[in-house]
Image 1 (spheres, one colour):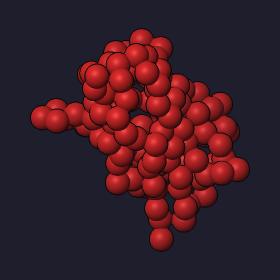
Image 2 (cartoon, rainbow, N blue to C red):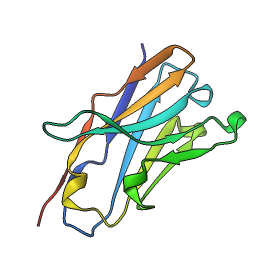
Image 3 (cartoon, rainbow, N blue to C red):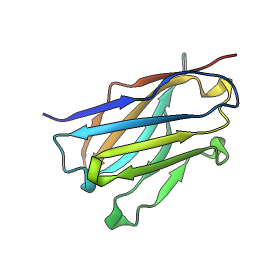
Length: 118
């Protein structure tokens, strides 16, 4: 059974930092491209960050709007992908989801809520 379990969400003040984790099980994690998406209230789900497999160079890509504030990384030994969020703003409030993709196969986590509030 495949599971992607996000954690690390919560309440954070503007300008603060948060690190999200997504632990995978039931898949050969190292073979999967890993993404973080987010969905804010009333908005479509959007891609935040992507990291390819180590065999693919471990290349990272980010949404232009993030302006270098977020960093995606992966630990294949722990089957976990991370999203370091720095200098957060109100606009970062959303449910954050991780996604694992291998060819036409993809799996989603259940999401973790991030709320930026003063």
